[in-house]
Image 1 (cartoon, rainbow, N blue to C red):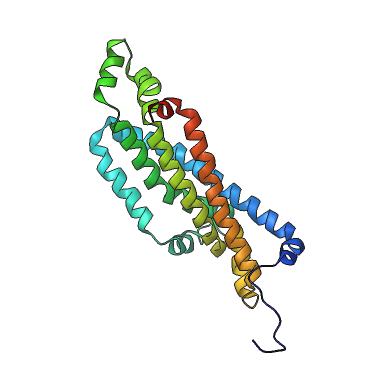
Image 2 (image 1 turned 180 degrees about the vertical axis):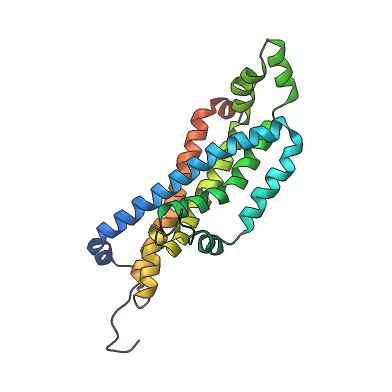
Length: 224
């Protein structure tokens, strides 16, 4: 490094102190985009998985379509949908893309969870007078819940990572700071701080969902 070249450390508390408002705003935006996208994806995925479960012939086309959507590069997807008037450079553009990417993981795990419910459990419930809907809500979904929640965890963590790509349309949460760091003469402290916060956010979501799964499935803990 030349003697007159300004210091460019990978981390400095001074950067965090001077830019605390920017970091807070970017982190909140990142959380909002993640939570909204995953919730919408869950609402869409559940009826799709249920249709595939009830009508097995639909599982191939539905999983095939969600698989194709998942293979589209995120940058290409955002660049493709952004010019449409209904989207544009807005949060809804990012949310739309994130929902599409989460569908494959969620639909597949929901379907696998329902399909893996032991048949003897179903037969026992039917013998006790459970109808189709009651069987679903009282027996099949609780038994399938660990598999479903595993899918939610994967979808949430991957969504946290993909939010940063939303910087392409100006709504990338912490990705905005990462890009700004690159544009600001490769400002290392800004790049690393935003990157670490992104990783920490993903880990936090994963731990919270893991804890929620344990609380919602106490029978799994006892069996273990």
